[in-house]
Length: 469
Ligand SMILES: Cc1cc2nc3c(=O)[nH]c(=O)nc-3n(C[C@H](O)[C@H](O)[C@H](O)COP(=O)(O)OP(=O)(O)OC[C@H]3O[C@@H](n4cnc5c(N)ncnc54)[C@H](O)[C@@H]3O)c2cc1C
Image (cartoon, rainbow, N blue to C red; front, side, top):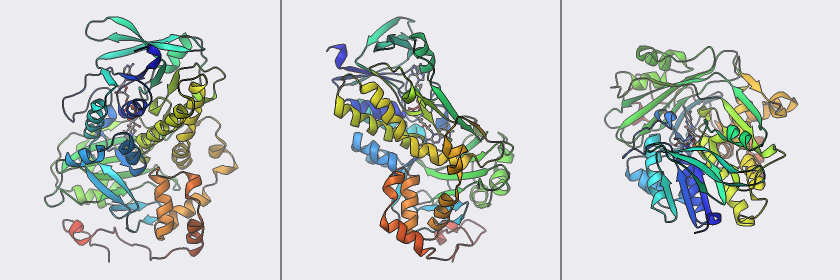
């Protein structure tokens, strides 16, 4: 095998697995380089600390994952994950009121992130042509500013260092990627950086779900409202495998949840816009301590705008664009970027120009998710913005249209269909603009405002609050 027909994927997480599965359709050999040793089962590991928090895989990302890893959804469901219809299986207090549970047009795959990663890994590594070097750290790039020829790696057990040559190197090492440093060493200047930082903190705890709710329970969320001049506080409850509920609380600067177990319940009940999730977890057995995360800054590194870009290199996933996780977009946006990379690979093969064209395509694929997250986040008090995206700072920062659509989505099923296709990253902003949507926007609300959470009688049986009429 010549090194030219080899791709090396840096990092062995979600994006790396999908990227490898995609690349193996076009390139003879794919080698994944992962610093960690993978756990035997669905266990969290050091390199993916965010796995302890609620991870929603929206239908946009799930469909792409299924395309590259056929049968993956079935394996996940067999292992206990839930497929929750959206909005039929969604009980959500949006900034505009409770969402009506119209017939589902989208879905989410609900499991622990550790289970999702295990299934993705097993399904990817089962495919021929892909191998993984575990406990192996990427140290840097080889080659120069005009072409990357491989990566320098170090075996963490023996300490041995060597070079792995490759015709294509894809960096999927996540938020902590060393790519800026690695590029600087070979003479490539630093990329522009944009960031939007709400100061959001996540606090998560897993509970034993009440008997009788092991299957068919909805995804429940109480969302923050960025239009109010107070810190944004929200909560989400997601049923996962093994009869468990994962509950994640979030608060922006000035409204952060603490790691205190007593305060967790109080925050879920009294700290957010409705006590529903606090009521649902009342008296449940906690299975974990409260875990916190501060990794919530939306940040993008514009490798796509650099005047110099080496052949044979692409940066993808969180390593180039990471989002405030509260929108559940990270994995699905990364999946879209994998599709964008494949389109470039199909058009150009490994010929000259692939690196730059692919980097631009990857950036474009993440842009809808970026715009959705950041244009909402700038509304929170104390949000820190770095960069000059005119959609955040210029006249286009006006959110009236988005708010009008959000409000109508709660009460008009065609508007909900379009808004949820966008939110689940199943369709682009351009794709949702149809005569059907415009007619629905003109029609206005079709059903009354919901005055209570739209729980079905069997879902609300263990609550003190009544089911919606
Ligand atoms: C608290 C929190 C909650 C989230 N919730 C959601 C959600 O609900 N839905 C959603 O879609 N997204 C969510 N995300 C985002 C999601 O976690 C990321 O988008 C996703 O993990 C990106 O995958 P990745 O493969 O690009 O990076 P990661 O998953 O971070 O993987 C990077 C991999 O690279 C390895 N690595 C790093 N450096 C090196 C090196 N030098 N050498 C070798 N290996 C290396 C690491 O060990 C790791 O395996 C959340 C994020 C956070 C922080």
